[in-house]
Image 1 (cartoon, rainbow over the protein chains, first blue to last red):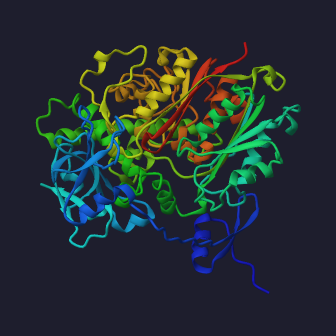
Image 2 (spheres, each protein chain N blue to C red):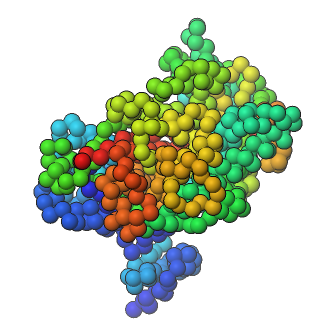
Image 3 (cartoon, rainbow over the protein chains, first blue to last red):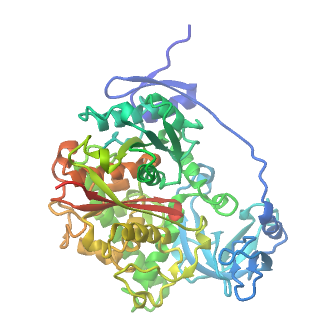
Length: 174
Length: 444
C-alpha cells in the first residue's frame, strides 16, 4: 500500500512537495484536508503567421516593414502591420519603415511571465516613427532604466541568426 | 438585482474547486430568501476567464450541473479581465429582453492552480501572440508603458514644464506620479481593513508602497492587484417579480461597453469623445487615446451614462467600484469616466475626492467623501479572481445601495450614508474591452 503523502499547512510548502514527490495533502485552518497532485501539460502548436508573414521574413533580411493603406485620401501607415486598414477597411501594401525613431513610452520589467523571468530585467519600448500613424512595441537593449526618457532617439538592430519571431528586431539608443 | 453573494477572495482555496466556490456564494445569496428557490431561476450566465487555469474546458457546464440547474438555459461568458462585468450585463440582457424573469449571474476563477509567474504568462496570452507576447509578455509591463506616457502627458508637460533638462523633468514627474499612485494603493488597502472578504487588507503608508518591490518601472508590488481564487454571484430579476424576493431591490439603470485595439501599439491619436459636461476646447491639443488613456472606458461610460440619464457623473454618482488592477489604471479611469477632466486625475487624488470620510489614511484628504472610489478596497486589496471580479463589484455595490454593508461585513465603517446611485466598472487587457453598469436604489 502506498504511504499517504505528507500533510502540509502552507500552500508554498505544498508547491515544493509537488515538485519533489508529485503529491501532498493540504490542511487548511479549519482542518479540511485536500489531496493536491502535480498535473503537467505541454503542447506544440503549428503556428502560421499567415498574412503577417512578410513582416517576419523581412526581419530575417534586416528589413523593418509596416503597412500603408492603398486608398487615396486615407493612406494610414501602420508600424505594426495589418493587411487591412483599421480606419477605412481597404487593403494595405507593405512599406519599409525608417530604422530609427523615438521612444513614445518605455518601462523596465524586473519580473515577467515564467517564459521570460530568466531575461529580467529587460526594457520594453513603444517606438514612434516620423510619418507613421501607429507605434511598434519592441525590446530596448544596451540601456539602463536611468538612461531612458520619452522622446529618446533609438535605432533598430536585427538578429544575425533570425528565429522568425518579433524578437528578431530590437532597438538601442541612437 | 435582488441579492448576491461572494466567497472570501484568497491566494488559494485548495479545499474548494470552482464548483464548490460558486455553490458557497450561491448559498449565501439565497440564504434568508425562502421563495428564491431553484425552480424560480429561468437560466444562468456563468463567467470565467481562462480555461488554462483549471485545464477544464466547458467548466461553466460543471457549475451549472453542480448547482442542479440543468436543463435550464446557460451560456459561458469570457471577455478577458472584464469577464465578470460582461457576465453581469449578459444576465441583465437576458432579463431586459423578456427572455427570463430570474437570471443567475455566477463567476469564478481558480488562479492558484498554477505558479504565480505561469499565471502571469496565461494572462499575457491575452495580448497579441505574434507581436506582443514574445517580447516578454507581461501585463504589468504593458500598464507601466501606459502610465509612463500618462505621467508624461499630464505631469511632465504641466507641473514640471519649467524644468529645462528633459530627463530630469521626466524623472521628477515619475516620482510625483509614483507618490500619488501610492496614495491610491494606501486608500484601497486601508478601506479593505473593514472588508472581511478582502484578500490583502493592510495598513500601509505611501512610503511602504514606494519601497515595495519594483515589478515594472515605475509600478511597485503594492500598486498591483494579485491573483486569487474566488467566486461571486448576482441574481437579476424583472421588476415584476423582484419584490417577491426583497423589499430592497437595486435597479440596473444603465449598461455600457466599449472596446479598443488589442495591441497598445495600434491605438490611434484622435479626438476625445466628450462627456456632456466637457467641451472640445478642453482637449484641443490632446492626441487621444494614444497609450495614456482607455478609450474603451470612455465609450462604456458614455453609453451607460446616456442610458441612465447622467450628464455630470461626478455629481450624479455617489460611489464607484472600479477595476483598479493597477493604481495607475484607477487614476486613468477617473478621467475616462468623467469624474474629473483628462489630466486632472493626479490632483483629484491629492485633493482626496475618491477617499472615504471617517477613515484615517495617514495623510490629509480634504475632499474625502466627494465620490468614494473602491470603498470595498478594489482589486488591489480584495484580489482579482478574474471571472468573479466584476460580479464582486456588483455585489458590493448592491450592499452599499441596500445599506446592508454593516450586516454583510460585520463592520459599519465602509457603509456610505444613504447612497442613491453607484457605478461598477470592469476592464480587460490594456483597456481592450470595458463595461460600466449603473446601479440605483430601487426602494424608498
